[in-house]
Image (cartoon, rainbow, N blue to C red; front, side):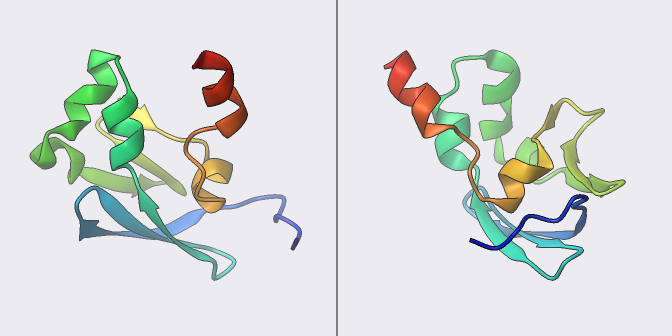
Length: 95
């Protein structure tokens, strides 16, 4: 498994459709991240509100982070870089 760079920044984000965003990182890595499973499984209304398509597509890249609103929704960059929004170990504990 390749080493993860010490500092990772998102340089671009493109909405692909159906809650998927293609992210490009400053080390030339790209990920197509599907946010729909995460948003659909959440029970928190502040997260579920991003199932509204108009709200979801209003993201931006700010200082290397992918954010919505005034950081109303954001994710650790390492999780986006690894394309792993949810920790499988934690999901099995919660189930």
